[in-house]
Amino acid sequence: MHFLDQAKIFIRSGAGGPGAVSFRREKYVEYGGPDGGNGGKGGDIVFEAVAGLNTLIDFRYTQHFKAQRGLGGAGKNRTGAGGEDLVIKVPVGTQVLDDDRETVLLDLVEAGQREVLLRGGDGGRGNLSYKTSTNRAPRQCGPGWPGQEMYVWLRLKLLADAGLVGLPNAGKSTFINQITNTKAKVGAYAFTTTRPQLGVVSHRDREFVLADIPGLIEGAADGAGIGDRFLGHIERCRVLIHLIDIHGETDPVEAMQIVEGELEAYGAGLDEKPRLVALNKIDLVDRELIQAFRAELLEAGADEVFPISGATGKGIDALLDAVLDYLPAATATERPDGEVEDEDDRRPWSPLD
Image (cartoon, rainbow, N blue to C red; front, top):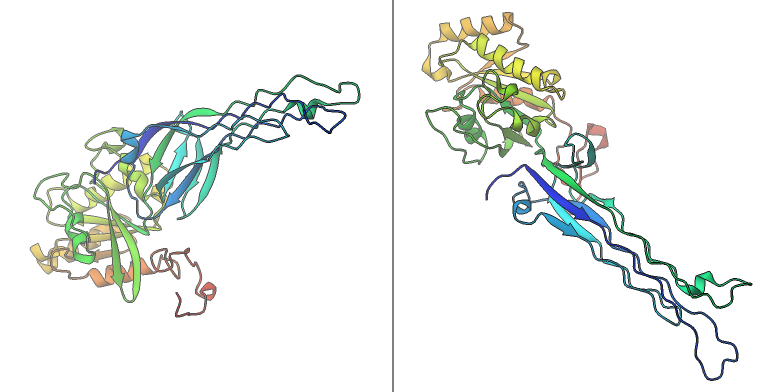
């Protein structure tokens, strides 16, 4: 399935049906009168977040969404049928933005969440509702209110508990393959990862979602390389894991500063998130070099440095232990009906869970 995280669509709610002009014609009723019913309400445009989707590719092929209009009223004071609501199903984590691509109209972060964006037009009044003491036989009716329409942008921000960042070839794909069942592409060249990858980590009887995004290079905030368009997928993460290649061409301290600079340039609070620095590929160097680079990173501002090897798995347990300290008592993966922040808020165990 192709990955698409942005799409522009046109939406229109249904117009209300017109009211009816009608008069009673019954054999044994001495005095007739108006009995035209009201028109039906138009359908709403509803967005629903559903589990199991992680791309907006469907909206590349279907870009216009129009709800049904209401039916007209009829005689005998019969109200027209309302138009059916149009439910647009999107992945969990989707934002609906105005055409300016900045104003957030909806933010769908929970499975099953439904939000009405455009309300259908009300039906027009039938001539019965115009009857007064001085106007006993009105012959006017309402045409029905028009629906609303607009262009909106859909932007998907994947929901993950932890995110992987780093320069290209830092070993992020190998790392996520080591600790999850993800089959990310691995290669000895830059930008092996061209789209975000998600994987579920199982560690010490806990489960959480880890997101891997394409590597960042200096100037990514200005569009260099793949740019910073995928950074939005780690905005919701609680902690970031910064992988640094200890055997790469770029000095580890410089590599840390480049990525931190790009996170700060992007904004959205990414530079304020907790970051765990991991020195990767320690299986390729000796112990003395590991200790020297670790000391340099700590002196450069890293809170803690974890020497690891994504290929052999060495040191990964200690890193994942540190990740667990930033997670809630129960993640959305462990509790599908919603995260639990504190241990005291956990529900009693039930065999039905």
